[in-house]
Structure formats: structure tokens, C-alpha cells
Length: 173
Image 1 (cartoon, one colour):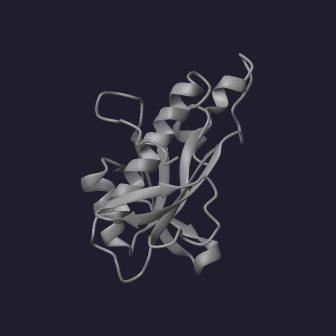
Image 2 (image 1 turned 45 degrees about the horizontal axis):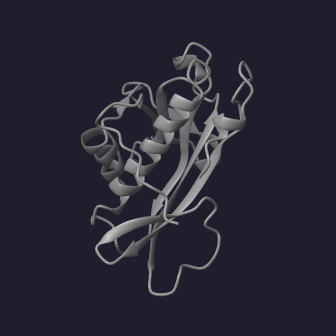
């Protein structure tokens, strides 16, 4: 995916500029990201394993001093193939994409990546917290989701500023 920053005039705001939506497919023993978009049928011989969305928004800007931030509003692994590492691979890719956004929009976007997860989804909480270094920001005060019968959820975040440990995976050609 070409960098949006290359066409961004200095001093302009990144709000709403970059939205990445990706589908992931099993390719031999590896996971491949096919995107952006990914709303077409899976390539022949490759099994669809999940998808994730990354966007820049201001939903949790109260945690970032008012700056827009990267946010994962949706992430899913195909039912029946869970617990095989695909979720972590998708999250790792979205973390790397968020790190590129933070680099490209330095000073205009918070270095924190946010997501929210239902309190009842313990496997996802363990994945984000234990394997992906997200921290629960409201452990004693979950938020009720009025769109989902007031199901409580946690807000989680992690710093994604580029370092030697965050290396973006190349997009397939």
C-alpha cells in the first residue's frame, strides 16, 4: 500500500485519511494479507482465515491528549480455525500498519493503538494482553455497549512507535 504521507501537505491533519481493511489467507504454512479492501473471493487454493480493520479516529482521544489515534474496530478469525495463531498474526500485521501511520503522521497522531473487547471474551483479552502487549485501560470500570444489550467491554491500548521489534510485513504483489 502506498504511503498516504507522501501526498499529505505538511501541517495538514490526518483525521480520517487512512483506512486499511485486510483479509488474510492461508498460503502453505504462512498467513498472507491480501488487501486493502479484500472484499473479493479468496484466491484459488488459499483458505480465508480472517480479517481486520485499522482506522484513524478520535474515539479514545481522551487518553491521547486530544490527538487522533489508530484503532482496530473489527477483527475476526474464521470459526473452526481458532487457536492456530491466525489472530495473533492478524493483530501483528495491524500493529505494524499502525506503526507506519504513527511514523507517517508524526506529531499529528498518537503513538497508541486502541481496541475494545468484551469482558466475556477472555481468549481475546489474553491474546491482546499476553501476546500483543496491550494494556486494559479501564479494568475496574468496563463500558456498557448499548448496541449489544449493554454488554460490558474493556478499552485496551499499546504504544506502536516504530522500534526494532515492530517490522511491517511486506504486502503481496
